[in-house]
Image 1 (spheres, rainbow, N blue to C red):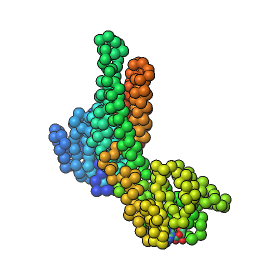
Image 2 (tube, rainbow, N blue to C red):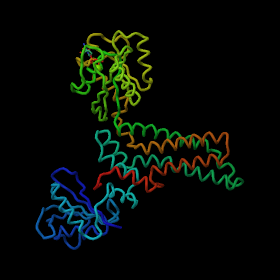
Image 3 (cartoon, rainbow, N blue to C red):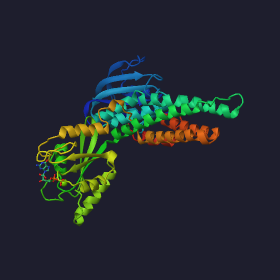
Image 4 (cartoon, rainbow, N blue to C red):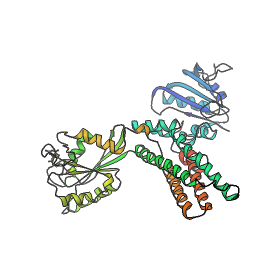
Length: 436
Ligand SMILES: Nc1nc2c(ncn2[C@@H]2O[C@H](COP(=O)(O)OP(=O)(O)O)[C@@H](O)[C@H]2O)c(=O)[nH]1
Ligand SMILES: [Mg+2]
């Protein structure tokens, strides 16, 4: 097994810069630059030491820590050298370490990959490290932390273990129909229970995926309703042009904001109208595209909208993803239960923010699972297989039921990493940065 080395801290200058080494040659390599380290090192003890180049000239002073395997992050001997966070200094030290035979530069995520391969952490926790490092919003941090502490794994195991037992019982019934008579009698209720747990997981996972990539909220409605004014007010900057002339907005405009810790992309769109000119019609086509990809669409209504008009605008986006607000509430107080907002005066904006946050499940971030598209796809496979197993129990043979349960177990094992291919590992760890 080769020894790997990398700068573990970010590429910019900072107070502290850390170089990490993992593998059998970690300690001998570290001694090339930290020559004064004692012969016997106390594990996890911080040694103050000088760092020198090959000629013996002092480059810096800092700390060296030794984490002997198997009780280290990777399960191998790990050394951390804490120097000052000067990028050029760190690359000089790293170059010196790489001169040690058997030591090479780590590939992206290789430390975490070794931690997974040595059984120190489960795959979902390894992925959580990547999520945490890439987190851009508070919700992403909290969700990644929950995954890091093994919450996802615990919930997967709660589905996996009973299913494994069920499969054993089903196969027992198949192999020895006489002895195992009735072993599958409660298969229906056991499948229902597993299905319930998987569906709950899936719901949280979908919300987790939303947090991960950030939600898209699209403002839409007729021309001149006040969408761009509302967009600017929510974005906190005069990003979109606002004008009494109808059809001012043609391109879709995006602004990034954080709502209750949830990363959010707000999209302003060209207003809907029938008699639009050529350019404006192209803008309206973009509005429709934006609506397709929206997690939530805010229909901005003018006070004088007719029932027919409202029905037509509503038809642009399904009910489940739509929120309706009355615009220009400073001029025209809302006349049904729907909230009124004014981008101009700020009236009703806090309520709108709260409403959007609640609809998107922000704030509940701590209960959310930081799941990737990969988890989501695997959980959908599990749900599909269990649903088919449940149906097969009524109309088909036990072989078919057992087959579907087997598929579900296989998909679950892929999430936990029990049963995972090299190629999948490559694609997962490719998302890491070097040094993690
Ligand atoms: N009084 C008032 N006027 C507004 C409000 N929002 C927009 N307007 C005005 O309505 C016109 C159209 O606004 P705009 O934001 O461009 O609407 P859009 O076409 O839906 O993007 C502009 O003259 C705005 O100043 C509001 O909340 N109150
Ligand atoms: Mg506009």
